Length: 401
Image: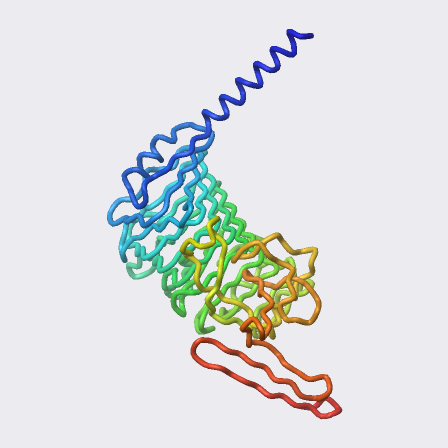
């Protein structure tokens, strides 16, 4: 019996030692592209390589080596900034088949693709983005008489898996010409899951996604400034599911063949989602506002997510999702299930951002105000850095405005 126990302990020690050897932590000097390249190459066949760094990494002509094993690239303690200075390589990151890459606390900013390549970030294996921002990332189309090929920001292969959680996509995409399925930010041929993610369209014709695989959206905010010639996810029947999300400023083409899992808010009345909790043709009530996030462990460190589309207290998105559907976090941090509109009921908000309850004594002003003793009157205040709108509504005893 003692011999068996000794052998088991020996095997356990060997296993622990092997695991420690298979997992490697590498610290890269801030902004040092050569060190980052070397760390990726030396990752080899280890179980996992965790690369930690901070600062701005400039990529003008060439991208990083292919990811061939399991790699984590994390901005720590401050974010890592991958910058293209208005240009940059056609291929920044490529995840090979059988490999996995996870980006944490990273921003991709000021990349503009030309007419070659497959996408700025290409995935044939497993790709995860957590607490990541894409800002000013412009894809490209090849159009010689008619458009034949697209270079999106992220390309996900046929047998690949893509996961976005707490991701902000701002002023990014490409211009769509005619009805061509451009997929200006994400082209998905495999399996894609987007959670707690905001997308703000680059221009009025920017199409966010092209999907011929399966795509799941949950607690997502998709916003464009106009409904003129807008289109959203190009997807086959049954290939796209959406829940607990806000879609504002897009036409209704994407709704055909889309499966709703409920509690979506869409401002286009022609969108025919009819699952439980879905509301069509309702204004979202969103404001582009400064936000405080906790993407870094040191809350005093600089943040890459400084602004977000936040619902005002009077928005129908606030407290509109039942508690049993809530997750543990939203785009900004670890909180859900808050009483954002101050009515005493705590439920979740649709979309990527959960509204923090802000009272007047905390500096808040947006919201609906009424006096129970002054029956039939209420005031709505919408304030932003540029203007303040005050609406006074009154009703008679029959409820007529």
